[in-house]
Image 1 (tube, one colour):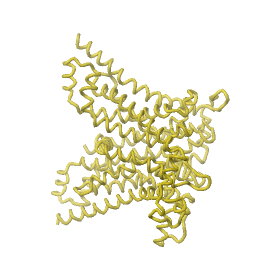
Image 2 (cartoon, chains in turn yellow, brown):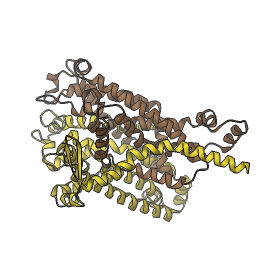
Image 3 (spheres, chains in turn purple, green):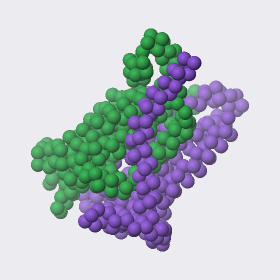
Image 4 (tube, one colour):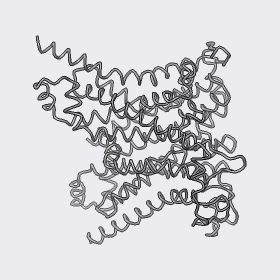
Length: 300
Length: 278
């Protein structure tokens, strides 16, 4: 009797302790997402008396889905995500393998790798903008002194070059993060598995393909998921580096939503773009979580 | 045979390591280097590697003529307050989830994980309307509250892991001694969970310090701009004033680099937490 009373007291205290955090999260994330969906189903105009809503069903979505710029932004985001994540995984794995052995300077290397992660993306965008500058950028100076190019190139003036330039800036900043996750995964692989593989005659590449890679799949999947989700929110880097240009060739989907809402005042269609983005993100997360789980299941 | 193989692998390791360090550091070097050059020197092509003349002009200008001082103050206030609030709310919530008999813990943790994957752009337009109606645009709370909400899920996940690793007998002993839940949490358990506070704190602080989209949309007036918005929107009439931008950037990078190097161990713990849980 006394025990249940005490249990109930602890449960009440527990709910009280969880509720402030949940209240803030619900007010700033869950409620606005519901409100976003509602906004995307309305025609919204800004007037003297505030914002006027009038329900218009799926009109905003048909405006968005019939617009070539939306599909271009989506395609750009998908290609950008695939290329940067693939390159980051390969480079990150290479560095993680190098660091996963008893070599000197390991601590220093890890410390230095943390620095790009803490860097404000906008600063790295300004930094790379200056490096790529077509008039006095150091990249042109280096390539010209190596006689790779004859005259300065406007790196950010061409759609393909600008996309590659932006990808390089992103890969520079986030590969260290991917490396850290993969390194943690590598350190979890028991060393007797390598011993066993060695006794079976598998060394070098063989043991990498048959031991390291399969056991690292959860970490690889996790890093890929993180990065793909981040790519769908890509905004800061193009905002400063290219402003989506030339034209709209480097405009990712988050930037399209931002511009539609805050530059053009198209609240309804812009919010529909944002809601569609969340839909894609949720589907991606569910699919990859399921894939991850089956992979983990296979290993166990 | 095996010995030479190991030496070979190690030397490749060193080569990869040195290359990686050079690639990471080179752009930083270039940024800091440029911040000490005169405007005339910055416009030269091909650029010089050693600033000539070496000048603090851009640092003085960024803080006396331009508003980097204000941007700094805003970023510091917003990031510190948001981090403290996150740590308090996350300690309470994660202790309850780890120790107290409440229902629905598993769905709660999954929901937090799901929320932490939402892109900011998903909530930007409703939050903007709400802030506008509350007259909160250009204020500190317009950023502190969203930053708290967006960083709580990770902090709760990390701290719950630390609480779960502390023996339950400690709580029980404290209760037998007559301590209430709050006394148990703050006097007995928290001192043992400081690594969790460090990890959650550093991740939250870095996220607030580097955030851009909310800061751009909610706080556009000079008096409430944060560093990231200040640096992004900083532009001259005819040319981009890189000297001043990089002077401000260098100052913005320093405190956070020092912070992360001090707390390096716990940052690594946070980065690896996801991989360990897999």
